Amino acid sequence: MSAPPNSNPLLHSINDTKSLLNCGRNTVYKLVNSRELTMIKMGRRSLITDKSIRALVDRKEAEAQSKSDPQDHICENKRETRNKDT
Image (cartoon, rainbow, N blue to C red; front, side, top):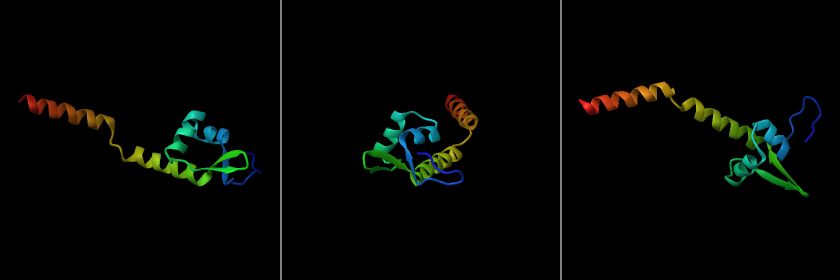
């Protein structure tokens, strides 16, 4: 959906959504089916709400930040294994 410069559209086409999220069309539909994105119909067009796209990105960002450093996890597993052996 083309928007005038300096405006934030409320709704995005499937193609715009896949570009915004850097993912494929099937992934967009999977996110809609899992209710992680909100799709509305306007006539024959299927449009994704900007609010749901931003909420998805915020959730994914929070998940990524809450995960510990993979190296810490690997070290913990090695320590647990060593402790079991002794």
